[in-house]
Length: 157
Image (cartoon, rainbow, N blue to C red):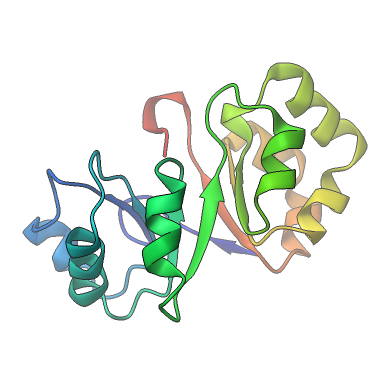
């Protein structure tokens, strides 16, 4: 398991912070969430040039737009579930996902944590959880070869 820290290993880039010196000074960002309100090929290619060492990206909306551009790069990208989305449909539509447990419906979250957490991890590379889930599943996560982003309600990704 690799713990991916928000603000250094994982950042969100959008129109407001595309040229933010604080973000640009981070030596190596592991994962970037592309959060453009109006994504364009120019903006996405600018991110790729500003962060050439970053090979993993996250998107949660405008999926066709991002997919149309990123599929021609050697970069890996994950689709993040959105608040209240239907989990089964989400998994069917996307093969590379970042599962954000804080955005799941309560019944889905409970089912995954109680019945099939290890099975879900076998099919994922990145998850977002809170400290309580991390503490409760630490032994399983330590054996997992993925990225764990620990956040809370005040610091959603």
